[in-house]
Each structure stands twice: as structure tokens, then as C-alpha cells.
Image 1 (cartoon, one colour):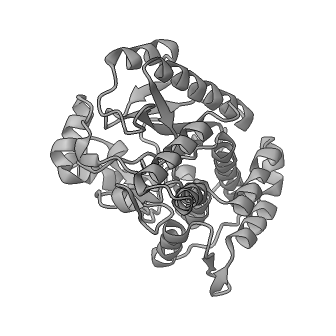
Image 2 (cartoon, rainbow, N blue to C red; image 1 turned 45 degrees about the horizontal axis):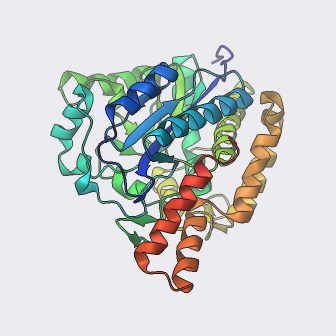
Image 3 (cartoon, rainbow, N blue to C red; image 1 turned 45 degrees about the vertical axis):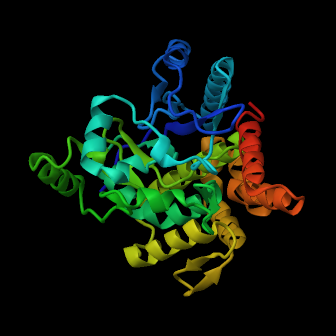
Length: 378
């Protein structure tokens, strides 16, 4: 079956936590005027998140990775400037190092009120932030075909993005504790395999007709066909404090999608692996990040993330050239060499403790680092 050429446009969504500059605690109820000013200056590209201590930005539909990077830099810069007027600061991290979820308040909005009522304590614990990347795939059948294949690469993307090692003041031992929280929700995790868009839609319609969900936007899988845009939406990644890490991961996903489409156009496809295998790598990325490697299913052995990334970059080389993002994608090697935000957060915390800081002082140092990194190079 042939498909029309996809546009391969790119869009990136980021969720930030709002912290008080003095205490570095989350701001449970930011001033309404702050959000109003954000909405005035960033029309249509910003909105409140489920918890009032969160805020979400989204680029417009971008034709290039560079365009998406410029918009993200502007969005971060503008949010930071406005927040600073209210003695607040955004941090692009998937968990706050020590704030308590019990002290947060959810946004009074119909969708969020329904979520709070349906999910109860599960929703109240959603003190987590993520990064979503949309790639334009206009054909419904092609979107499902690529959805089925792209799952293999999700653990790789997660491992590169981890930024949530702490939860309620404790080192969790996981590089991405965020997923432990998110996986408690129904309709989360890896998507199942669908033979066609019609089959996918039929399953969605069962849930809608039964009144379980309003629409497909309530499927919170690691990757999904967007319910609102003609895109394939990658959702597994933590949000990255450093903008260049965000851009590199977004570019890598776009290149993976193009590579899978290129193979499909040549009547080839990526090998389909059982969810139990992908789930194992997903757990390894969640637990260890880049540190302990992932399973190479073909070899049946563990391979370092650095080696896997090198192989992946070689695989998508021509796609990066075609999308004009070779430099941005190459930055993922920098991530594997120096580590993710989770590594840096733990290093700051451990160094502070070693120098005699109390545990809470060490956690404050982590927040200070996240504040600084979120606005670096923007």
C-alpha cells in the first residue's frame, strides 16, 4: 500500500513547574494575573495544566527543527520573565525535588474537574511534567502503521530525557520516577498493536460509547495518534531542563519517524517486537536511564546506551540530512557522554551533602540548578 508523503512538520509541548524563588517550594496557587499576562503575550501557545503549580507551552506547527527550537526558546524566556515579576520561576523538570502533592490544588476547568473526580488520589498525585513531540503524518493508515513500529524506540528516547530522580524529598533510585506516577493511570503505557486505523477507531468508539472517555485525547499512551492534530505524538519523555537536550530528542524522534516512513516506502518495515520485550527496555530506561544499557533483541544481550545511540544515529543519518537537523540530532551524543538532568540533579545533591549541607539544603541546591538550566541558552 502506498501512502501520500507526510509533511513531517514538528511541534513540541513542554510542561513546567512554578516555584517560589525565595523558598523554592512549588507555588500551589500562582497569582491569576500572572497566567493572564502569559496568555496575553503568548496567545494560543500556553495554558494552565491539571495542577495550578504547572503550566504548559506548545509551539505552533513548525516546518523545521530550528523553527521549533526558536519558538521554545521564546516561550521559556517569556514565561520566565513574567514569572519573575511575581517572584516565581519555571523549572523544566518532571518532578519537584521535595514539594508534596498533597499541598497542590487542581485547576478549576471542566476537563480537569472530570479527571479529578474519575481518578481520585491517582489524579491528585499527578505532580509530574512531560514533553510531547508531534510529527505531521496526515494519512490515518500511515499514522497507525508508524505507531506500531515506533514503540521499539521509546525506551531509547526516555533514557535520553530523564529528569525525575527525586520524589517528596527522597532519592527514588530511579532516573525517571515520573513514569511510576503516570503508569498508575488507566490507558497509559505502551499502546497495543492495531491492524488499521479503522480497528483503532473501533476500539476508541467502544470506550466513548460506554461513557468511559470523552474522546481519544484520554488515551494517555507513551505514543499515540493525536486526537486533535494529524500527527503522531510521542509522550514518553521527561521534560528536559536544558533546551538543547529537548531539541535533540525532538529532532531524533522526527528522524525516527521519517526513517520508518522511508523503509515503508521501500516495502520494508522495522521488525515488530512483543510488548513484553519493549516493556523490559522501558523499565530499564526508567530505572537506570543511560547507565546500564538496553537489551538488543536481535543479539539477545545487553548493549550500552552509547553504542545503541551511535547505531541509531547512523541509521537515521540520511533522514537528519533531509530534515536539516544533523547538528541538533548529533547533540544526543553529548547527552550520553555527560548524562541527563537526573545525573546532574543527583550530583548536585550528593556534592552538597558531602560538603556538609543538611538534606533540605541539598535539595534547595537542586532546585537552584533547575531554575538556572531552564533559562540557559535561550
